[in-house]
Length: 549
Image: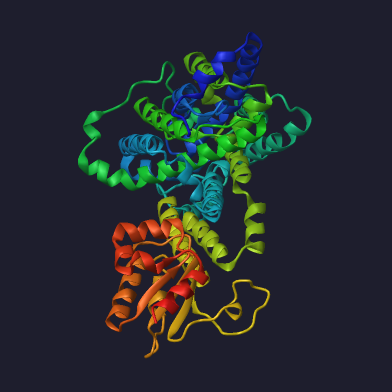
């Protein structure tokens, strides 16, 4: 059983001084990586730059302290940027706070109810589709800052199409100085890791471009000019209970559900990747509970939604982190930055922030996987992939996930219905099959039908397609290939039994598996058929049919 026990409490039993040193070093390095990224993701989310660091501090610490993974690093991620920006634009930071708290509650409930294993059943095509869609929307959303374009008419576009329209309408404000700074930052991000792997390229890009803009007095917007004030000090407690009205909760519930699903999927995916890197096994339900507590904590202290970050988790592992201590050190290091170095963030150019997010968008897009799925998958899976992607870009993530899951479910039911068959035995020779009809004698006035595949509501109607002859006295139904049956199929079986009873036909069932038998007993169907008419093998069923003549 997946224990509801934080991993920290387990690993500390064998903790050593040597590992502590490695964890501290890894935590500091991850904090250096997380600093510019947290600021960039906060800005992309439509909130102040400090909110991203508050999220990494509060959520990062809580996930490490309570989580089910040894090495998970949590904080703001690109997956949330577009949906958070939409919430802030429509309902302000109060709406975001309510949505994040509700998402946290949902995550805790999912963990306590042991739903961790269920998240893996969300189709890969859906997660690939909306991840690629988020990458595109994130990229388009940063073109404005990368090129220095300014909206002259006070536009505040939310949807991706609106952003493109605003960009074309204000293309005349293109700032070549800003674009050059953006290109320089992007070049550093791409080329620096090829030479120096220990120092993050994002940190170098921030320092170099900030220095050039400051010393060269370039006409480039910085964080200081884009945001009125950047607060230093401890993350402030910002929970305002007055906004937790029933109306606000009802309005934010769809957003909360989306945030909870995203946080759950991404955190568990990150934990699985981490497991493969350190040969460990995470506790999925405890991880969900920790993510829930972390999101509530982040919302209460001015942060945004958080989840496990795959890139930062991988960096933690590569630098020696092996216990939750490294994640806690990462959060404490960022706290020191907020206390003493936050004013320096004002110097960071916005084109540099946009360049960092361009790289994030490229890395998360998974375009190779997307293309490969389009080439190799069944048409139904390609349809789900493309529809989810398109809806994410054109509308929003809420619509994309809802439609994607419904479409995937419908297509899955269609496939299952296609492979479920109810067929009468064909009286032809088939010596390769030891259970073939050719090797046994079917009594007179007896029909034999075989059901193959799961009997659920999408395929249940095929039961009623069984044709009965005028002289039929016994109907043998072979169910060796039916591993599951649902209420709709059970209802149709009862209808078939009633029709047979009126015509004086006895139903004999052969090889009923465990789950269908439990459903039949629970509904009382076994008593209608009679214990003698349940046979373990087709030969027994045919003998029973002979006895009934």
